[in-house]
Image 1 (cartoon, rainbow, N blue to C red):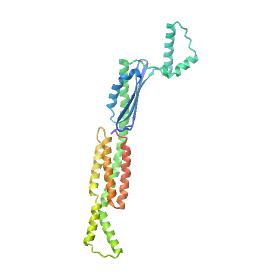
Image 2 (image 1 turned 90 degrees about the vertical axis):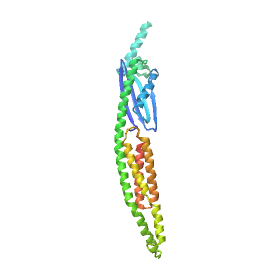
Image 3 (image 1 turned 30 degrees about the vertical axis):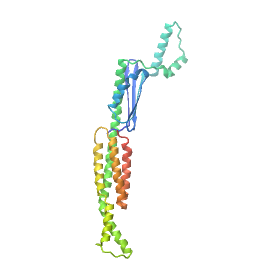
Image 4 (image 1 turned 90 degrees about the horizontal axis):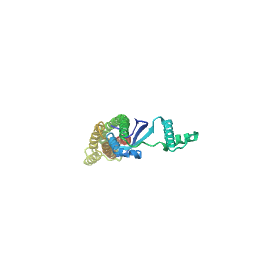
Length: 284
């Protein structure tokens, strides 16, 4: 299981240039990839997209590729001064930099331009991309492990509530029978326990509140959900479908049970299920 939230960053050096790749992602039902590259490096976009698809199937992913001069801002300033000095010499112009010029160069972000795409730059971009994606994938896997523990804990809680409902269900009909005779007695209507009308009423009630099929399907769905989230590959979409089926069975149990104790358990089931559904949105 992998989370759809992740972050990775890596660098690769090519001469005086340091290629920087940063990737991060948030939740999205499909794979939505945005790659930002300097214009000179745009031919690398298809290869980068291919690398991303190898590690991610869902999520809104932002991948940014840029460059920095080795040595930071001081190195950039020195490099630009050297180029200006060389240009002045070629044009027979006296070049005497002052503090103002140094300040303008060091603070001009536009002064740094990416080098043209070369074989060495291509290799550096791909190396940095792969390293950043390894960190990105590792973070998603680690968060996925935490989500797995949370899901299994909540599935266990759901099973306990289902067990309590299953234990209570057979008592509902006998409880209704007792209440029915009490109401008849309170109304001074003496009827035999074997009276056909009473038996028919009890039978109809038993049929209306029978939740045995729903409980069987619910237990099956819970087992299927647990098996699925323990599997490999893309998990989120099918897990969301299974949760919809679980929700349907819980809702039906709540509407048919006609019992206060079961209704309380149904509320707890719905609360736990909602927490799982909120978290499953984070799973790839």
